Length: 101
Image (tube, rainbow, N blue to C red):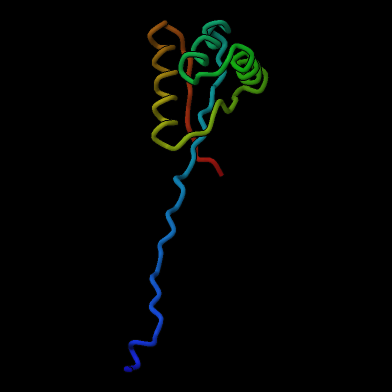
């Protein structure tokens, strides 16, 4: 038997990294009606009435509120959809994204 027959062979496995997550942030403004913000949150982010209201009120009190956390592509798409819904209705509603720490 040769020396190469008795050696164990190991395979190096690469670990797949989880994609970096991004926060979608609702930015408060003084012009967009609360009911409209709640409707956009329900439509774009698929949250219920109660959660939408809490998110909207937190943004109202603190100036900003994290709506949800997604992968980068999804977060940017959702933020764009929400901002575009505001523009289409003539409101300065704004959603932004930033990397989660």
